[in-house]
Image 1 (cartoon, rainbow, N blue to C red):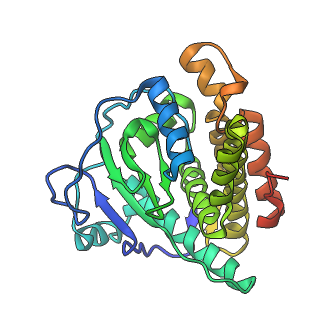
Image 2: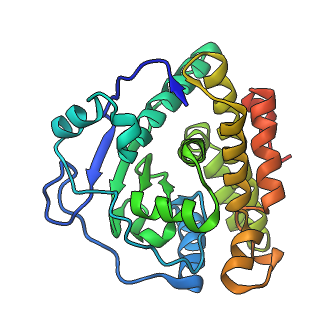
Length: 299
């Protein structure tokens, strides 16, 4: 991947790694032990139905490893200095994630303005092990997620690395897809889609999973739209191989793939994020169209 410039803006970042209060995000209250298969599903359902977070990746049953890449909390000045040093985007995963986050916000700011609307950027938080948010306490087992009340994307880099290693979501552009998907959930918040979906779940509990799948597939589609617009406008130049990385990541986090890997069986009735084929199809719908209006998964 090639970016239009190497500048990394950390002003929208909260570094909550480490529990000693050394980061500028302050001390955190880490959630209790592993959520496990049932616990994770309940966490996602309760929080979506009750006004909490939108999980981009349902990683039921996965135990986070210790990859050693996420580091400790830094001051904003320290993070800016490190991420703007020569070669930082290649050496440091957190700097790379922040740069993708910057470019996602830049593209959506321009796209909203082109349509006569104002974009309100989310924030980005790094955490390790667990974190307390406006959606409640979350373990790393939730995976990368977005919390609507906070309007913030939460990422544990160690677990993100394991997601790529164990589930085949490999490559730098796979990481970009994951970040763009979570920013896609922010679009749903500021456009009112997430609020409407939650209301529909409350009025039709029997359709809760189906509606959740549609929300997740729309975020996949928005990630594809961002990829196309960022490439066309020169924010992020990608190759065909890198596009394949994003497609591979979308497939790797399909509910059917994860269920098969974790439990050896597939139960479509329990899906909350969509199958590998669905996630691939909607990402490509967004990428090929470059138009957010093509992402109406609810119709």
